[in-house]
Image 1 (cartoon, rainbow, N blue to C red):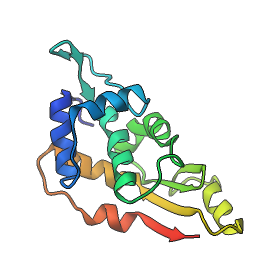
Image 2 (cartoon, one colour):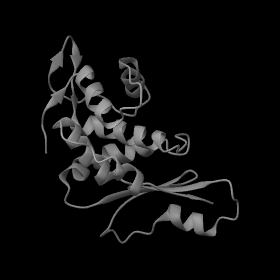
Image 3 (tube, rainbow, N blue to C red):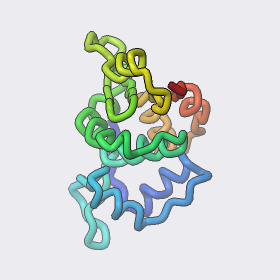
Length: 168
């Protein structure tokens, strides 16, 4: 895994490669820090500010991916914490991680994980038609993040193909 550290400006450039249509400003990273989406965990400081590691950037990339696809973040407010808890494992690429949600129900699973997909169960049993079931391949987001860091071509289809939106 990449052990490099990035300033907020460098992180913004990385995220701009992932989300070229999105206007990213440095004050957003202060918001992400204060709202608990991520906190810089690097060991080094640049201009008196702690640097970001790859595990700090991944939750932001996931949140921005969900926003790009129209997923209301009020229903996914626990996503950054789930991603932060498993960031090292997601970035090791030993397994494929999938995040699913339905209403306020979230689930982070792997293909080898025997646990039930609670959001899917709620989706299948729910009678209301106003909630969205969604799924996101976190491994694809992480791979594109590494591509952006390395200056490689981003596979934009990974975001679209791996995010399945089904209207309830």
